[in-house]
Length: 442
Image (tube, rainbow, N blue to C red; front, side, top):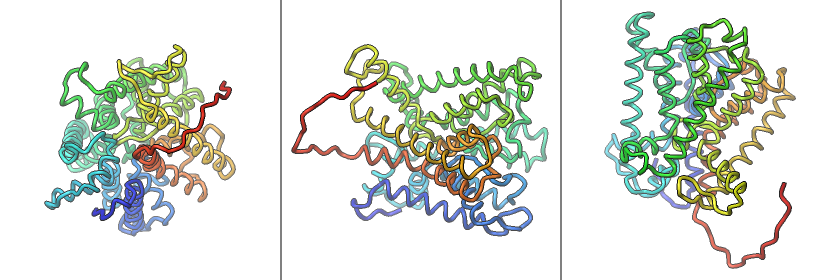
């Protein structure tokens, strides 16, 4: 983890770190011992699975519960944990356990990975993040165990509880059942535990730390207020829209009771925020629901969290820009605070580059895959947003299609972060400033 020179770009260091983790995971998953029948997994599928786990996406080309052995599932779980915490954060935790000091350059990389504003108290934040993560995952596992013990043996119930608690908190979406969580569609207990885990994991460690320290809504930072506002709004909107669109769909919720429809709509309304689990068959949802889910997947979770996507603060900032323009104001204001132009430029750049990549991948998949356009677009956004939901085309992807999805998952985990680091570097004041001239917009 040692970084000897400031000349090494933090973005490049992180990207290489994730590549190394994925390569090691690929090698381990391709071993015969990693599969249930010891038949092994071909290199491309092993790479796909390792990338999906490290990028905490959840897209799969083979069934996790039946195809992989206990060793293979353990490798996937470890990759999920590393991907959820972050490569540099995981490395720092290991270094601290070994009694090694963290130098300044390494602290800078951790700062960038966690999207933290300054270097003060950064190592304490890493300790806090690790304790919070393992504590919440343990609590989630215990609560799930209390339900699973009625269905499975004690050892299997414990294993399933730990696996799904980690997968949920890290927003990975990997499940040991072939139909994800469809068997628990109407169970409020399991639904609340799983959604609580990935919602907490998806709001970001800095937000949780701010809530813990301030404990007062008025004293919260602008970032925390914006994350909570957008998150709560999307949870309510997502649940209501899915309920309205799927309540009369005979293939999903039409024949369910009102209670089951409410629970399923709530779960399916929040899971596109990069969680990746599903309690109703995605491929049987209405086209309107699928398109709405694409929008939610594109937005994703919050900065510095275990989730991916465009991020809630990015959308919040752009909505604030639109509102300010509509009001005829040159200043972008939120909660009696003003957003700087650099922040707005970063938000615009992230959206444009993300849209460009998704369009490229979608276009390629429409050529290489035998699937309708909506299913292909759904798959592209799910991969880039590190969500993991699928209409069922993942396992049938061609080699080219799998490579494109692998790249999307990797860029979804590393790309936006790399872009934020590149744009967020120290501004350089140029000696020459050109005259301003207007162009026509709209």
